[in-house]
Image (cartoon, rainbow, N blue to C red; front, top):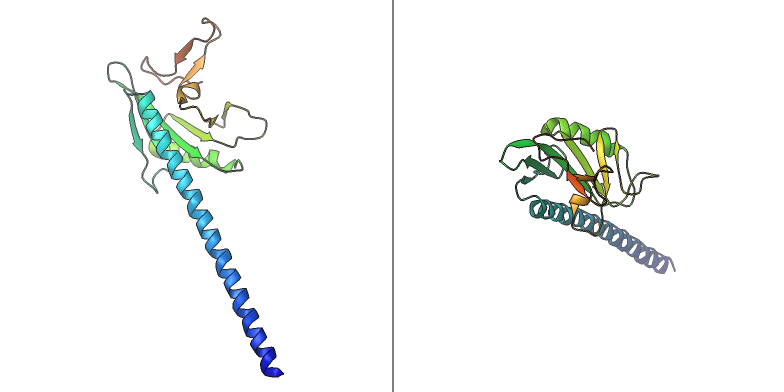
Length: 175
């Protein structure tokens, strides 16, 4: 009787250990999947910016530097450097206010004039874009047109729908 009880306890222990190992493997797989999704979104941002702004230099930020994802060195029509934009791409389910302070610090380290977070999830009461604590926050959309978000804005004094460039006269202008 004791031998049977010990054998059953041993099987229960093996099953519990296997369940724990399976749960850990699933957690690691999910974490890797989220990291891969983030990297894919960063590459998409780089490609979109490069296509949209062929005069600008688009540089991925190496892992561990600055903390942003992409540096956009904005050039005017004659090639003069207008300034630098540090982009951070977020693909998470919840907004975190700590991103703002971190990106501002990264902005200083990168010597960028503008810092932008592109996120699928936005702060409460925000629907498309806003400037929060010196950081532009814009909604990630399925559109492949960051021009709609960060570098242009509608000017109410111009004809309906007219867009003007934030930087093309030698200065980075705030939105």
